[in-house]
Image (cartoon, rainbow, N blue to C red; front, side, top):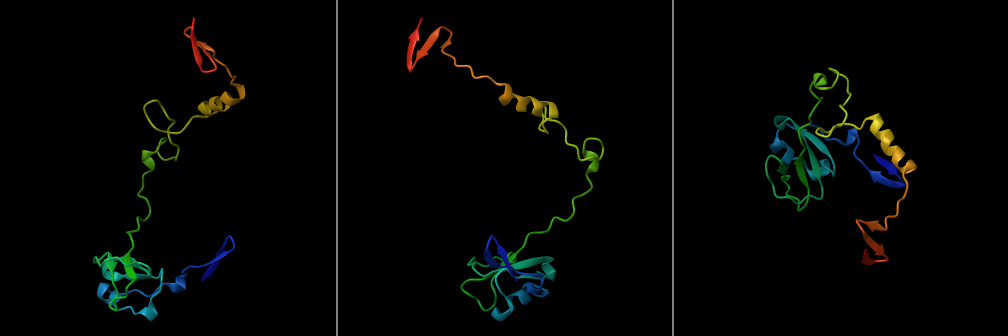
Length: 150
């Protein structure tokens, strides 16, 4: 399947591009050049994971994570994809309010969100701030880079 992003046509795999599943790594290694292509995924049942074919990879074989096809191409490896994390476990009680997604306000000791009062205060600083040119601090005067002490 080809899609266009910002006027650039790019080939991306579609569901139809995914190869069928295989029983094990031995069977994955036998998938021939005419049956595999860059970015193809195949599910390996005994690994309970999909593998991704990277046409440019020249990595050394490291079973079961990196698999070189039996026809031993100079480039092209099956790469085991990471375990999918699945749906997050129930954790609502750990939120403030016993289940709402409200996150506590930041404090001096704990990370959190900024309160609306703090946001209002920060927004007002620029609008109401005044520029103060300081020419003297503790009796020391700066005149264009030359320090004069009174």
